[in-house]
Length: 267
Image 1 (cartoon, one colour):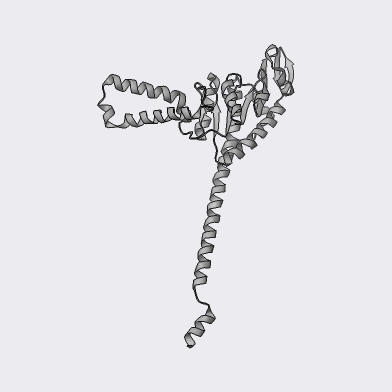
Image 2 (cartoon, one colour):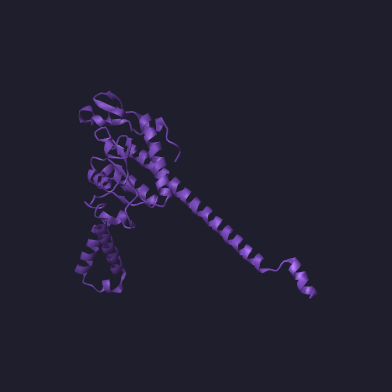
């Protein structure tokens, strides 16, 4: 994705905040003006925040760690889950289960249970079960898949969270705070930006606004993933060169010198 410009955010409606009576005073530094009873967000601040967040996310992903995408509101679900799947990152777009971070061991057990059910359904013995029993197992699997499917491959706590609407996802934000997990979030004028580490001021209700910010974040993560692949390739080449050098040195130390060969032949 090309670098975002002011007009891109303007066209996507990122600058539209909430009604002035619903504002959180702590958002004052990010508000440009009031118009027709609605706060207008300063898009220059938004651009700056996106750049800062993008650099940080890229560095986190470059180390091989995961970013957990969190967005359960209707207009954000599709774009967030789509971007997370594209990047092979975990995501939560249905219901945030209390303790998903702070009680991760229990969540892991639920994931193992889901994996066990999936294996069971592939076995021949499953086909021999009564139709009612098969239906019950399938329903349990679908229920777990709906809530936990997005984090099925998450084997340890994520390195950071990307959140759309911190008021709606307040439980996720609180859990991240307890565990000192940095939070990157789209923060509207009715929210407290001090609750997250990297607030991105912007409209968190409109699909176009959510989409353009999510894709910008996704682009930064993709860059970090590509840099990680490049780092691994360079490390592999360096290791091969060092191995070859050691082999050459070992081989040369085993071979007698030309002078030693002459002395040996003259005896």
